[in-house]
Length: 301
Image (cartoon, rainbow, N blue to C red):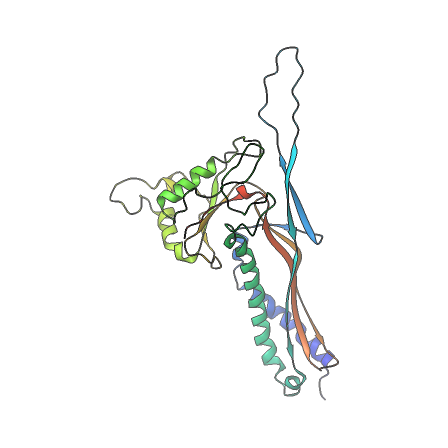
């Protein structure tokens, strides 16, 4: 007796869903090394940057206390995107009993595509970090020398772009430590993770893990390693498009964010008109940034 489309869907779907899940998990979520994930429950999310208070004033005896106003400085908006892809197995392939083999191959390819797309979209935030066409809530690109605040501009990129080496890495950490908040107060920020393209992994490993300074005959210690700087080490992101730019994730909260509106789901159905069986994967999410102090970069070329 011939199997109907409805029966085929019922028989195939559980196995294809399991195969999709196994294949999807084989691909590393490289974006997860960079972004903090939060759950979204609407079409878009907004985060308001609040300026705190200035330094407290001395209160003379018998006088009134000074008051200060917290202000909203800018709003970062995250608009969720729907990412989806599907494939169809033709009625003829079903008749010729090719559906089992084709469905397995197509399902693996679909999982690979969905995972790759998510990594590309995550990396795009850094790939566009120095592009003024991709401005954040404060009207500036992610990495800029002139992010506006109530106390004046601040920079989260090297003043002189440089490739990754001991000097540029140490200067980056010095600049991060000098970060101030919206009112100009020191926040004692620290770099916690180095983010690099694959072309810089050997340089990064020598800089981070050598006992002594790299490239010298001196007996000097590796200060970055000895002081426990960048405690989370380095991560290689294969989706960064520049072979020379590097980034440092800081401990400043509300920096780079990933909002998850709808986790990845798969579904399968038969089509009456064509006789095809269709299998779909879909998810909703967005990558972006709120406080640019969450990252520091070098626009090396």
